[in-house]
Length: 304
Image (cartoon, rainbow, N blue to C red; front, side, top):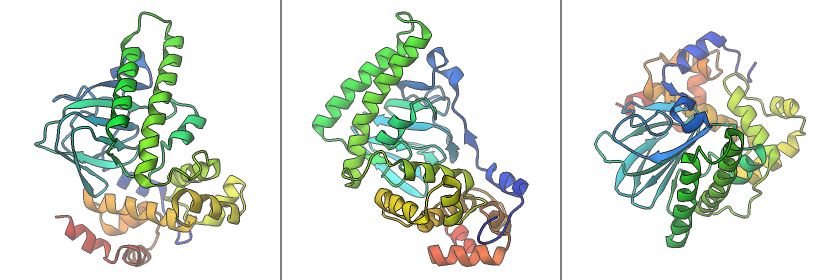
């Protein structure tokens, strides 16, 4: 039950599935491990089988693209990024994105399956900090260190003969952790929030709960109760991590999903409202207008 009303689960799923989701393809990785690293190419063999799918789509895993040439234009959730040589583009699970149909992608692609790294590292590296910018510009020293760390990670990834699979996987996790901590440092600097708490478990749990439940639950109090926190504790944690209130964080997630469905599917506005937790189409339209300054139909028309 949401603060706006309830929605039938089948209607939500039917709408959401119309944006194609690419799952992580473990069979495309060396030894079936939960990560892949290798050159970007012109076919679909890189990036966990995602490759350069020309249609806008979602992914359910992390993709980090390290560019050796540019410019390349790449869209992530309604923002077009121009990426140059030496830049990093970090696409997180669930984000809707689309590569350029004409630009040449040259560099290295790294993918990670959710759950491959332990929770403490996930929090330390900000793997699910969607508030951070996807486009990173390492300076000369950072880029040199990242290149060396990435090269080491790729060597470990391809070396399947030296160690048994269990040890090979453990070494990969350690190498990936070291590498991602370097990336996280660049990411934190890009947002100017390196002084914020990197291991805020309260916010991490809230973000995960919202991601799982935003289509049916828009209530801050309900999330606080579910997670075992007071509302005040939740407010402090979310503000410290994002600068937003918990309600603002939930509303932004709802609006983002609504925009995705409006822009990338032909689902009627009323059904999109149901898919993001509004049983009444008028309430959904009012909510969308309040947060975006345009009606759902108007937003859809702007995307043509």
